[in-house]
Length: 103
Image (cartoon, rainbow, N blue to C red; front, side, top):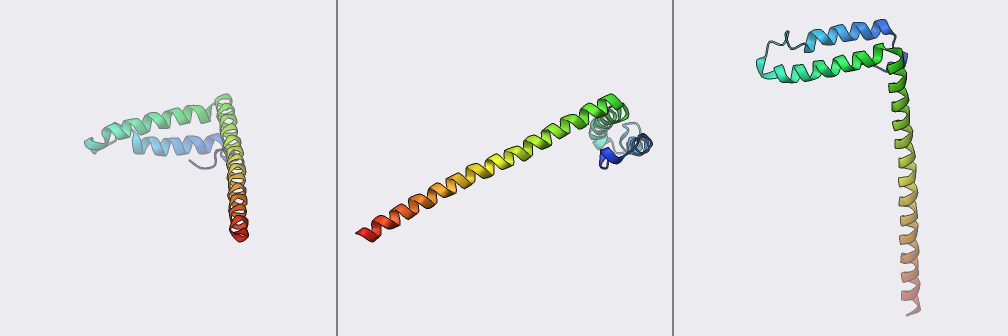
């Protein structure tokens, strides 16, 4: 499905019906893929239940925003750690070069 924040309930229903026809286990003609179709259909049902219920959808969007903000903040933290390590290596390298020049 698309960017969920800009999609209305009718779009969600339409996408669900289209995908349900594709993944419904009773429609799956390839018996070797029946388990995979069943798994995907169950995931599709869960997604539809969440996105079609305003309260569940709001909770889902909130959880996504928390995850996104955590991932962004952890990238910043990792960058700070990396920069500190790099500065430490530069200082050590500079210190070693100074020692070699004195000798």
